[in-house]
Amino acid sequence: MIQEQELILLSFLQQFRSSFADKFFSILNHFDSVPYYLILLLILILVKPKTGLKVFCLFIASYYLGALLKDYFALPRPYHLNPELGLVKVGGYGFPSGAAQSAVIISNLIIRFFKNNWKWVVALSYFCLISVSRIYLGVHFFTDIIAGWFIGWILVTSLHSFFPLNHFDKEKSLLNSFKTYWIKDKKKAEFVRDEN
Image (tube, rainbow, N blue to C red; front, side, top):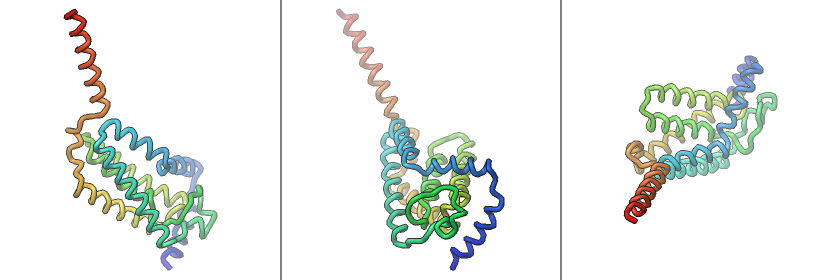
């Protein structure tokens, strides 16, 4: 069984744990939480409403597809088989990794929506750190992560095929819309006052 082989490898890797790495990767666990995704989506919707709504739908599809596959395969997490491997405890089955799906989605958004060349460093760092953290924390096997990458890639590709996100820069910000409306309204009020 492949999970038994992965378990041996994970047990070997756990020998190289350190207190700093434990704290660091435990913090990264918050990047796979509902509050984090809600804040991220809220900011995106405020900045670019149309894109934000599309990404919201993408996350919803990712969540339900992942949950459906988890229940279908019903495969355990590493710490279910060896409690010593789990630095954190999360609910549900392990395959596929929802965090890996989200890592693909968010990394792709970073690459598409920012012009600075540093976007590649940020996107790749986010993608790698989130993926590695799930293995380090003992909540996923390597196969869980790989499956999550594949599903995330399918979802992102599907979104770009049916609802292109290439015009991010051309989309008017919701905040800018409020600002423009407020300025126009203020100028109109001043014009009426001057006439009187």
